[in-house]
Amino acid sequence: MSKGVRLKEYVKKYFLVVLILVFSFVYAEIAKTPPSDSAEIYFLDVGQGDAELIQKGDFQILIDGGPSDAVLSELGKVMPLSDRKIDIIILTHPHADHLAGINLILERYGVGVIYSSGVLNTTNGYLEFLNKIKKKNVSFKVPKAYDKIIPFANSELDFLWPGDKYLKQNLSNLNNSSLVTKFCFFSHCALFTGDIEIDEQASMFEYYTQKNLISLFEAELLKIPHHGSRNGTNEKLLKTVVPKYAVIEVGADNKYSHPHTETVSILKKLTIQTLRTDQGGTIKFELTKTGIAKN
Image (cartoon, rainbow, N blue to C red; front, top):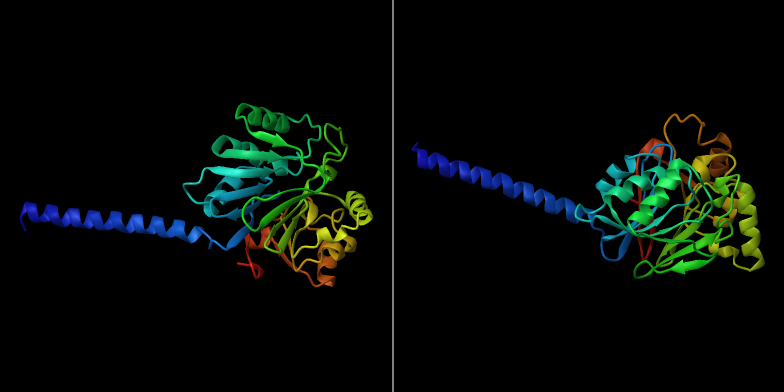
């Protein structure tokens, strides 16, 4: 075989390899993109912490960022590769297992707006967070109770609690400053609770009961508060929300023994389908006009 023929064969093989790689990349990106009439919710496996991603096409809402850089690799698996912006970030409260990953995200992604309760906190992690959003000129908002926004068509994001109740307040239990939010796509909803504890839930439910709006908490999908701790879940919560699915975000063999036996028992008693990130990794749900289902 002449040198010229060998060169042509080499070029053909090289071109074929490049073509296969390009096709694989394009296919992977298409596979990540949900149909136009659906949205996705991911409970990201970030270990002992919380991070939830709501996604429709190239629009993302991130609720908390977990305790480490694990959130970066998880986002990379589910977001389009070319998408380097997160439109909305919600920091439920400034504990490190919800905040630390957000600080890393701020270094690597553009961010449209951040919502939080505005509670006072002087930890290094939170001061770093405030410095980064100021440096990057990211909009920071404290929603009032029952504020709502429309992230994209056929959707609604409601800020149910605590509103500005704890704005610039020095709270002894930061768990109870958690932003509680409800996301709906068409008429199918998910409730996100941060680490809100039972005593604060009682105040929240009383507030909405007095306004005859307690039904706002009904949702087919519930993020169980505080990683399944006994101080975050009781029958009152579950019978108010009436979820079909419950998700516990928790690290394997964690030092807190989360989820606590009491929480698991209540969920079982009420026959609520329960999923855990320590057992199944990242958990994905798909929302369409007709329903919400684990994918």
